[in-house]
Amino acid sequence: MRSENKKEFIKTESCFGKNIKVKIFGGSHEESVGVTITGLPQGTTIDMAELQKFLARRAPGNSPFTTGRKEDDKPVVISGAFTGNTSKLMEDVVSVSKEPLTVIIKNTDVRSDDYKSTGDIPRPGHADFTARIKYGEKINMSGGGPFSGRMTAPLCVAGGIAMQILRFGGTEIAAHISSVGDIYDDPFEPARVTAHELKTFREKNQQLSEFPVINSVAGKKMKDLILTAKNQNDSLGGIVEICAAGVPAGLGGFMYDGVESTLAPLLFGIPAVKGVEFGTGFASSFLKGSENNDAFYVDKGNIYTITNHHGGILGGITSGMPLIIRAAFKPTPSISKEQHSVNMKTLDPEKIITKGRHDPCIAVRAVPAAEAAVAIGLLDLMSETPGYDMEGNDGSE
Image 1 (spheres, rainbow, N blue to C red):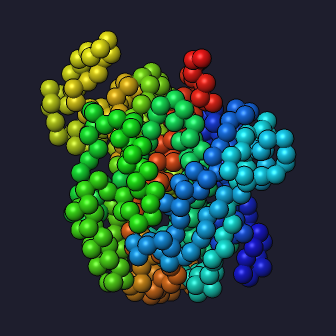
Image 2 (tube, one colour; image 1 turned 90 degrees about the vertical axis):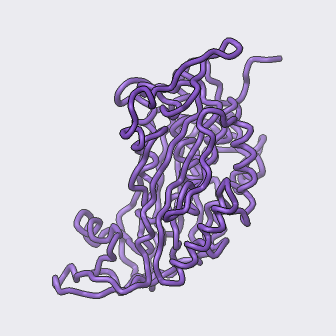
């Protein structure tokens, strides 16, 4: 591993998944970050150009609302895929082989010197303090190390691939910034949003000039609020709303096999997520049962609910209604204001100003990461469903 001071650091990796297993590895200022995916059927095709478009939405340095760090975020297949009868990789379309699929993204624009002076002085709001207690000096915390938002790049690789596979079965996922400060975007229509509408919205937001909101007026107010905080050397949090439509009924199970139990850990694994809710979520605690219950009706032989307070999940099992999920992101802890800290060696009080390049609002670039987390979870759930075809063969002629 690369490090500016030639230290030997421990290898950092994190794994999740039951049927589709994902291992994310690397660190913010290592040579690269990457992901290994096990469980994808042999022959599964991946459109690399489409995956690159998805990653570009998360990539830094593309707008004044994100960090100034500039990375191409080009996915490089290391193993587990092939093109045609050749061994050449990174064509527009690759096919998964028998081996686990491993993809890396090079870190090309690092400035580890920005973090040399903070080795013994934990930055408020960061994992510096707790990581030091658990790992000592064996972990490379430059740029936040494995706790950095940089780790959402390989998450988006896995999620982008999952979204391509889910699309074969008619499932679409999209997310938007639900709120920043006291500014709220229009919500997805919880009971009637369609897979086609989500696909159209997401493709629109693949244009890097787009701010991921439904209501452009609310988006303009959010932009102004973020830039004001940035000019004050401060930051803001936000809420991201994720919706999945075209999800078949019957996924999940009771208690710890439930859909919420599967998706929540994946969302909480995104750095800075501090809260997750499904459907009406916390607001349902203020309702009466007669208000919160979703009445059933039949249309053309199919059962639906008039409203969707349950967010597409009843008893941990999908109902066939759209999944509605929200993730709350804390304000970026890296701010250029003077803050109080301590020296962990001397225990003397210190004052610190965080250097480096940081997002003034994490929620902006977190939108595709949230989509990715939900996509991986849904693919994992669907892969254990009898008859579900991950390669798009519906049996029709």
